[in-house]
Length: 139
Image (cartoon, rainbow, N blue to C red; front, side, top):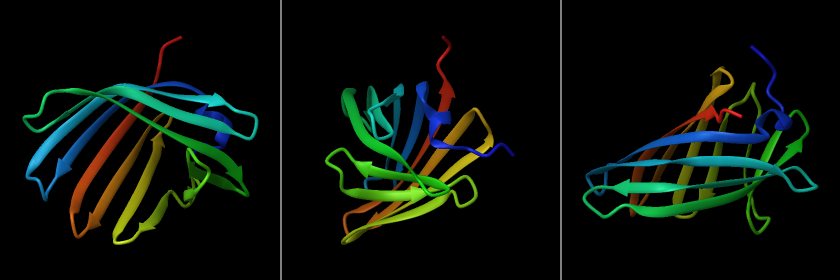
């Protein structure tokens, strides 16, 4: 398997995310675009698209993170610089504790350049799984 490094993510990706909210007993879907753009210290991740959750009206949704090379892996930070999680192609799982909630992520790079991120989130008011699939955006 190819060794994945931060620079491999640079560019635009088609993003499709499925959501299973066990607590709310609903499913959802996000369809949009994710872009990794240079920001001097690494890459800025930004996504924008349409979120459909249960019977609610579709809404425009955005999200932004900072990705940085760190040792043999990648550290992900919230947009304001607070640490979120870190991973590598060899250790593609991470945990983020946001008491009282726990966020577990598993990245999949076996079909690179198509890759995935599977989130499992649990807490007193949360119980959901999100599976995001990223495909390179044609030039």
